[in-house]
Length: 267
Length: 253
Image (tube, rainbow over all chains, first blue to last red; front, top):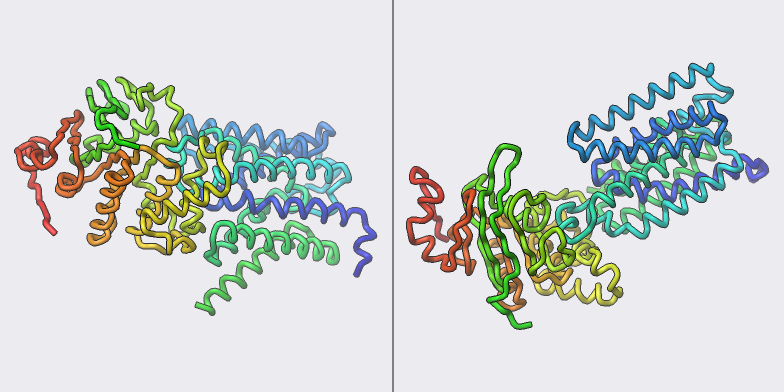
């Protein structure tokens, strides 16, 4: 059983995974409550284009994914504020546009040397030693920012107009929120994969919401589900040699189904 | 703090506003004094809510002047002096996971209170606000589980928490049942008379406003101001405001 810790790559994956699991619900709870789930999907596809650029130019793909996602997040926010197109249209332009770019780049370089599937669905073997440092640094930055501005984000999510009248700079907080989403999505891409990141952010929160508790308690429950699913998923991924993104999200989904069933019976 | 009814809190001069080509407000002049309880009435689409949104800066000013506490609105920074209860507040997400205390605490999240706060002052202000609206016993309940009348009181408590001087309410009694409405009006009277707050309330319920408010502003593109609401209701003014063809039904309870 403990032989697992003889492999450096799984220790790296668990370290990075735990950081991501801890920070994901802090962002996810706002994504869910503000009906912004599609933003996570869009930014993760943008990150894939970033990964493709990084692999092509031989730069660490987390860095290029981060750059692409931050740039896209700010552009989406601008496009939405301009009111020239619908907010959701802005998202789909970026989602399909960046996916198209990623596919072109990948096929141009004949699939690179890495397995594209790893970036689509997540894999524990993709996490390199430097990645853990990058993920660590970025998740600390995102985590600290989220903790500092948590209350303001909560007020804005609950009642944007009243928050604005009370003197909160809504545009500033919305941009900050978009950048934080970009950071967290960029660091999650290796372990969870582009296609499953939004599930990582959203599923534990949706499950926690079923308990109908206070905001603080809901977040705490989401954190527990997130961390538990991350560890369970990574272990399954290791022992059965399957995609980690898939195992993590399936664990979360199982908990969601069990919770809903339990709620149904107990009501 | 003694109330100075001569002190101008909000001054509106020659204010006009249009959504694209659609003129909503035209040459509005209105002064609101400290301690006023101003009812803003008018037909649907007359610009009542627009006027309120312009005052609190939710809509950008196009023409004219708005002075808040003597300062032009673009330069005004002391937004904690204003509490705003929007129509949307009532239509909030009922599944939102927040307790009454968590919602009221949001009133402490603005700039002014962020840099000038201790946990204990926050706690005291939250308790005081909840006691003022008679909802202290509900502090641990989820906001979505309360009736709309109770939720309304919680939003008032949230506004009270930022220690405002003015509270603006946009159609707060919509969807609140009659008996809860009466309690709500009693609460507003208390805020105005005991806590010396200036109230500005948009409502379609003219009769209630004429009874409760101390001043009336009748909006229909422009604003006619009445310092005696009862006289306004008695006269033929409302007929003019709503047009002769419309029937105004007063329901007495």
